[in-house]
Image (tube, rainbow, N blue to C red):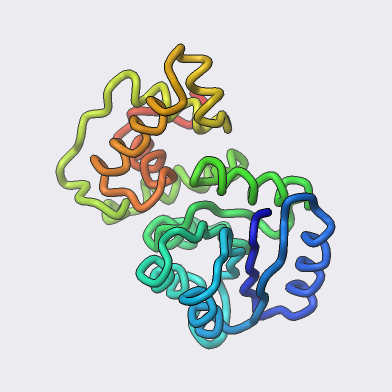
Length: 220
């Protein structure tokens, strides 16, 4: 059972979302609040698998919650839920180390899928946001990927293959079957890439590959 928490200051949306998600198989709503600080206290002692996090909140915003949560409980996957899709917003999502970004006008079925994928794959990459993400990557030259981008690292052909397959939502097992390697080997490649790029999660690796033009959105 995937334990889900929701932090959003719009009570009607939050309660409606909790009710909706409670109808899905394999999902359990364990906590919901409009206060990011309250959630951080909860997360320091209780088990949560996925946090659905709004950006715009009155006490501390979603970006700050995201940053603080990494030091409190880095195992929790963070899926940003927002109507903000500007390059500035996506840029900040990259910086704070969230595992994914999901627009609030998407369908409930896609949200259920996104929650499960962020648990299984460590990230959720919404290809519909591809153009916005590309703009954010190119927006100024100060975009950070949780590592030092002044030194351009080299990604091997195998690593690039894995990144491309990740972008089309293949699981590690599916990647292994396609590449004729074991699932464990795929995971080792992923972990090595995260260490190499100093990414907090695999989404950071994908974004790094886009930044250095190792992959292109029009290839995916």
